Image (cartoon, rainbow, N blue to C red; front, side, top):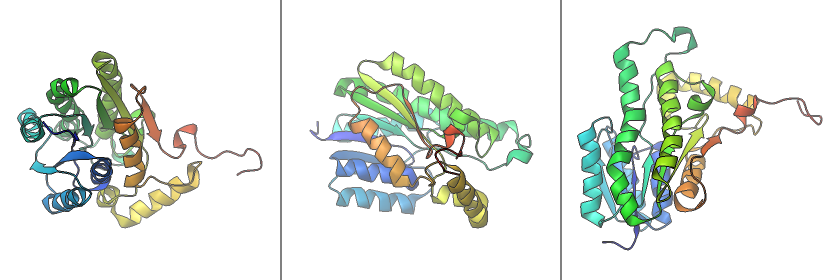
Length: 262
């Protein structure tokens, strides 16, 4: 068994997942890099983690498929003999827009739930025995303010993140005291994921509106989210069952006129 700690980060080819994997590699973790489609980017993420000193595994796997979740976990155990942390970052959406909220079919709804919520559950279930064995295990679910505020790219995405938030609270109770379970809930993230979903022009408009409205006046970078995830994984020893909103204060209702501010 390795003496270094081990983390599985799902969906870690790009964006928040890649940033999280790299930060944890720099903190002394060995890292399983997971992807479903973006193999070239996943290899770049793996290379960065290796350069940071981590031993790595790079594995394709669809978290919506239970057998593939179990295979990811088993591969980590065979390689390192332990799992200390799980970051459930893999996620998908569709950008239907508020005007077309009812245009999606059941298959699309179920697919998004399958990756975002069921996938997270399946990864937790596969990891729990090993997290308990390692002692002081940690699970962090990458959720969204969509699940807390009921806003977002589509109804199934919002529903899936609401499910992740509720599951986080349940699991924090069920898995204590051996395992801490928390979630981060970012607002707008400056990543390719949003640009791919709504196009560059649409993204720039959304970003400008967000930055004008949010009290702190900025969107999250993937690194901003990763820093919060790493704190919950590798610190925060008395924190469990928390849904950490990373939205520059958007949940406060936007900017208001106080103390001379507008």
